[in-house]
Image (cartoon, rainbow, N blue to C red; front, top):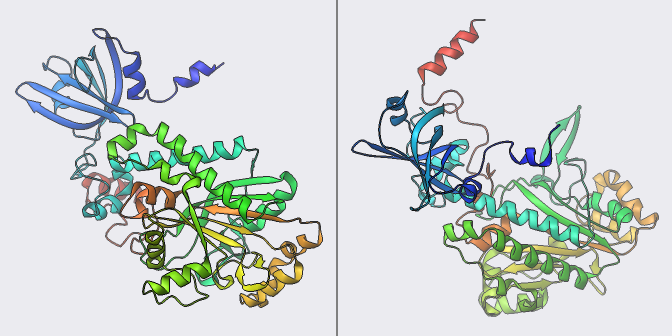
Length: 471
């Protein structure tokens, strides 16, 4: 029977854990991946690295089996080194008495993932053409780890505040935004969409659990070349009964702020490595400022913007507004109904505006989180559907509409994309750096003809393909 302590031993030992248990002068065996090789006279130095740190293996003499083969290993190979541990240097080292080759990296990949800056725009083609190899790049790995820590912290926040984690479907017949921005799919002969937003399912789930949330995939067919949009991203959504727009603004700000506090705490190694300092005080909700959409448009026109009243705000508008308020986080309230989703409640007495609010970040990342009160009036939601050009598709939404006839009380929700938040707070040059395999317009998912099979023209692979093609 496997115990909890046994579970901790499954898989690799991380370098930080090894260093914490290893004693100076004692002999140990350690398995790891070579990220750098240096040769000086008869000595060979191997750096072994993972996302927790680095340890150096020193091979001083070629006096064991396969040592010549070992000394010729390339970065990317895995070895098991046996020798005496020393923590007198940085990084700590193992003076190897023997080294066993676990797996070899013989692919002519140059530069290696550890020789380049993974966040530099100069290396885009290398990193995203061969993503599976270059995920090992330390800068890329650090960003992905920070985002993972942030998502985990969001989960903890909602759990601690008695929100129930729920599982909305990815395949759906309903979309929140424009049809042309939906990603289509076919399943069991049915033409459906990939989810743009989980709001249709979160509302009935909120009637069961009172407060619910999901952190799940969302898809939009974004055709523009914006540095802050992806076709596939993570959507953090929460829904609660008996809330108004002020409650939702408080929830949105508090959740992001507290999750980021925890993220900074547990991501110190990654943030130090990237030389990034996150200004938590500016992220504190007590330091946010707010204005209405009407006030925002007035300020924009005074600052030379050509934004038409009733349209959504452009990125340039957002930057003008945040600069106007001293580069603080800015809530813009009561956004135009024309630019928002049809389930959202309209402002009483101003039906051209909606009971929605966006938090705009001051670092150019734009909308960080949006909140919305939802309508509970059946006539209003049908009118909204028609005004949004969905009259012919109303039958798809009937069950959702009829919740308003089965006790749906006042409610609302918040929505945010962790990728957008991390992109902005880390000051990255493109949101693609926040996803392992990002989907964006100028990077094809389906490889080009040259990439489809064996781009290195490796004779061994070609021979294996030919061998099995003849069977």
